[in-house]
Length: 312
Image (spheres, rainbow, N blue to C red):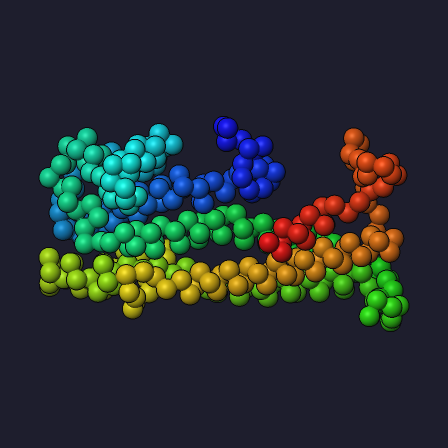
């Protein structure tokens, strides 16, 4: 069957396709290939800027066009190369060497992927795509939600409400204050999330710049690696690694996301409870059906659905 939202194996690319389709730019295989191309080209430019070789301005412009105009067809071409190499990163390298041929700088082809192992590309392209998604999509959406909750808290700050403890009526409170509980919790956890660096590994086959040192023993490759990763890519280079990055920062990000999701689950459950106690009323939407048997019902399905997805 042709892949459509109806034939997708998982709900992410199926039922919820409309909500997540913009994440293709960060987490699809096309995106991964594009970010690998980005890192390889930026590294090539970096070496040229550090005067390891002379790059003609025309060729730089042509390679910049390859990056800026990277298309699905380009990714398909790389996948075709991979069908021969059976190696995804090597396929990117071969694709870029073909671009150098087209740019008339075949003599510079071996500077593509110079001294690197596949994980130098993976452990920079993946955290870079993650960083861009967090900065352009996730964090802005969280901050918008926090701002919206804050506005509601201000709007409702003088509305009295009977509080409950152990499910039983307790001392009175104010609705705005109860919403501020979530605003404060979210603010704190988002700040913790933002404090975690976007870590990268860049140091050759075993993390020691072995090939780099053999080729250019007088160069300070640690400083050059730090310069490229931090100033060109905007990531934080881990100073001591094996062949791979140790993923501790990524794990910290995921743990922070889990805590944020737990707070949002609490929001869903509290609002659901307020609806069930008739503190809140839901707006009806023309054409929507709350129950196949009870037409008067308006169920809090959005909060229930959000709770389920946040727990996944």
